[in-house]
Image (cartoon, rainbow, N blue to C red; front, side, top):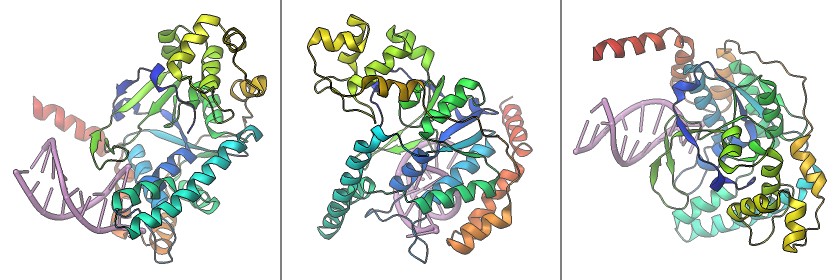
Length: 343
DNA sequence: CCAAGTTA
DNA sequence: TAACTTGGG
């Protein structure tokens, strides 16, 4: 998934409250995929309605977005358009992994190994066009803006960040930084708890903020060089050089200055369209044709979609909608009460 | 993942 | 009231 430059980044912990009033561009596909993959039962089965339609993505999207609004965060979801042709290999590989995982999931359930089952169920997650469409419908009903990117959603989000239309981009992938996003927010959740991959162990996960400026400064590199490091390690558009991870990629780029010189100096064969890959990060296909506007949710439409069509509990939906309605009134009051209570 | 109930 | 468990659809 994306480019692995985790080792080059020192994230700063922030609280959800620090994002109060901020516009955050959320990688819609990334978020929905996360919900679909994680919101599952003990044996890996996702949440489903009475028509056997998967609803995990709607559950995650609804409750999390309510929490954002309640906390004064202004989300805008950015969805992928047509993927660049260089991405087809990545897409095919992902599809194969999904298919294999689906079989392994069934086998694990038969064997009664639910831990394995859940693991493979998550890896088998497929976000359908229908799921994306009904997610957009829900956002529309909630009065939350979303944008359909011409190509990569992360590129569009980064572009909006560069323009200053959004304060930060939110995604679990690092690609945003290569696309030029100034700020990347990771682990943008409320509960602050996450399962460790593989093991049924929960750890505290804080919201993290990474700035491009800090990454470049800490590693003493330019954005062009960061992109070159990404290409060395591997991106969605190219295979990385075998045996080179983020640390050695950084050292090589710092030693030689650019990717061409690294390849020449180290005698590495790299038969992929280098400049074409770079352009996908530097000059991606994006649009200025969007407007950001947040409006009051249409409660009847939300109830019809989630309750009537997908069996969500009416009480839970109403409780969530109450929290949206009360946001701005009760929230500051609550904080004052807390303050005075402490004296 | 999040909400809500239960527990220490 | 924070920590933990379970159900959600």
